[in-house]
Amino acid sequence: MVLEQAGMPLRLIDLPDPEAGPGEIVVKVLACGVCRTDLHVVDGELPDPKLPLVPGHEIVGTVERIGPGVDGFAVGQRVGIPWLGRTCGHCRFCRMDRENLCDDPGFTGYRIDGGYAEYARASADYCFAIPDRYGDVEAAPLLCAGLIGYRSWRIAGDAGGLGLYGFGAAAHIVAQIATARGQRVFAFTRPGDGEARAFARRLGAAWAGGSDEAPPEPLDAAILFAPVGALVPAALRSISKGGRVVCAGIHMSDIPSFPYRLLWEEREIVSVANLTRADGHAFFALAQEVEIRTETVAYPLAQANAALDDLRHGRFQGAAVLVP
Image (cartoon, rainbow, N blue to C red; front, top):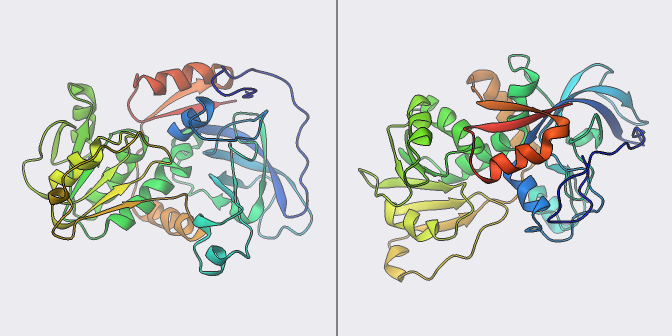
C-alpha cells in the first residue's frame, strides 16, 4: 500500500521484492501496526516524506534474506522493525548516546519504505527480537506504541500518580506497565467517551474521566499521547508541585498561551523524540517480565485506508494491525 501524494488515499500496487544489501535483512511481514504517526505522514502533517512511500513502522516478520556483514540473525527468525531505521553514528548526538536525536536519521515508513507490504527491508542493527509469548498481531503495537510509550513512561519519572491523556494504543500499554510497577493510573479520554473510560478501568486505571475534567487528586506526572496542544495547560493544572508533563507525540496542534502560575513551583514540560536502540532492548526485556495484553483490531493489508480512517475517527479501542 503506497502513498504517492500526501493527503491522498494509499494505492495497492505491485513492487519488486526488496534485496538485502550490506548490513540489511529482508523480512516477510506477518503483521504491521497502524500508528497515529502514519496518519500524520499520510495526512501531510509531517514534512517531506519519501514519495512514493510504503508507510508502516510497527513491523513483525520473519527473516527471509540476509545481506553481507550481518551477524546474529538467521533465516526464519522472527524480528521486529521499529520507527528508528538508521542513524549516522558520528554526529554529536550519536556520540553522546542520544541517537534518537541524530542529525541525519532514517525513519521506517517515513524516509524508508515500511511494513504496509508483504516484504520489508531493514538495517539489521536496528531490529529487535520479539518475545515468544506474544503473537504476531499482538506484538505489532509494541514496536512503536510500546517503545515510545516506554520512553515516555521512563521520562515521566518515579510518579506515584500518573495521568495519561489520550487512551489509545500507547496509553493502553503504558497503563499496564505502570500498574504492574505499583503506580496509580489516571486516564483522560475524549469528553463523553464512556467506552474508552471503561477500557481504561479494565486495564487497571484507578480513575478514568474526560480530558476536560480534573483528577480526584494532584498527579506527580502526566503523559500526553493525544496530539492536542490545548491539553498541555490542562495537564499542568492536574499535576502537583515539581511534577512533569511529557508530550509524547511527534506532532501536536499549537499550545495555547497559559498563565505562568501553572508552570511555577518547578513544574516541567518535556517532549519525547523517537527512540534509541537501548530503549528497545530495555522495553522488550520488560515485556518478558510483565505480560502486556495489547488490544488489537486486524485488517487485511488491502484495507489500510479503512484502518487509517477508523484510527482517525477513534472507531476502535487499542491498536489497528494490518495483516498481509
